[in-house]
Image 1: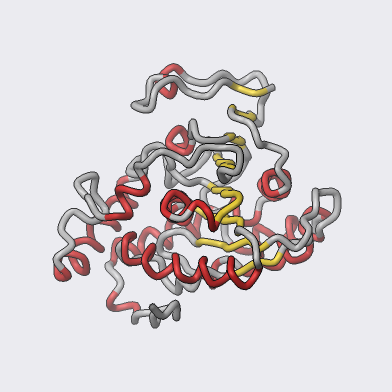
Image 2: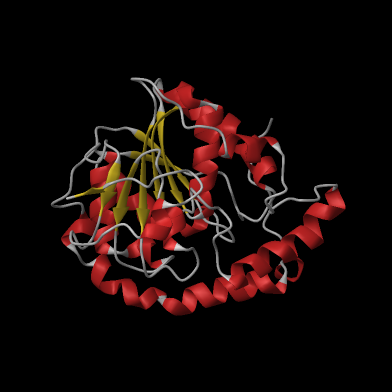
Length: 288
C-alpha cells in the first residue's frame, strides 16, 4: 500500500467548523508569540538530555499535517534524534483509514533503521500513536503524547465536536462510515485504541504531557494509567513551541519518566477526585 500523502483538499471542501476551529486555536497564541522560545537555550538544544540517533516519527493533530511539525522536527535533530514525518498532509480523514496508511510507513522506517521507533503525537496524533502501538507493538519503543485525550477521546470542546460532526456528515457517511468520530465506532482503529497497552519487559513506554490551560481538550482526559503523566504549562497548540514542554519532551524521550504516576508542574497539586473515579479505575498516584 502506498504511503504517499493524499493531496491537500481545497479550502472549499473543508467544513466551516473545521476552519473555525483552526482559527480559534491560532488566535490563542499567534506565531510571533513564540519568539522568546526560538531564542532560548532549550530550542538550541542546550541543557536538555540528548538522544543517540533514535528514529522519532511525528504525528500531527487534527486539522494539521506534517507542515505543522518542522519546528519540533528541527529541534529533535539538534538534540540527537532522527525525526521522520508521518506522511499525513491534512489530519481530517477517518482514523482507521489514517492508521491503515501510517502503519506500513512505520514498518518501512523500522526496517530501514533496524530498530523500533519512538512516536511523538500531538493531540489526535497521540491517539493515532496509541492505536498504532497496540496494533504493532514490535515497531515501537516509546510513545510521547502532547495534549492527547488518551483516556477520554471525546473530552473536547463544543467547537471541536462541531468540527468532527461536520467531517462525519460531509465525508464519512458518504463512504459508508456511519459512526466514525463517535463512541459508536467499531472499526479496527477504535478496537485497537481501546485495547490494553502492551505489557512485559520489552513493552513500549508511554508518557503523556498535559496542560491544565488546554482550550481544546479536557486536561483530565490526557491522564493515563498506562504510563507516566507530566504536567506542563501552555495552551493546546502552544505546546508545540513552549520551552517547558520541550524540556519535558527531552526528558521523556530520554527515558526519565519510565514509571507510572504523575509529575505536576506544582508539586503540591493533588489528583482531583473526579479523575480518580474515571471509568478506568483509580487514577495514578502523584510523583513528587
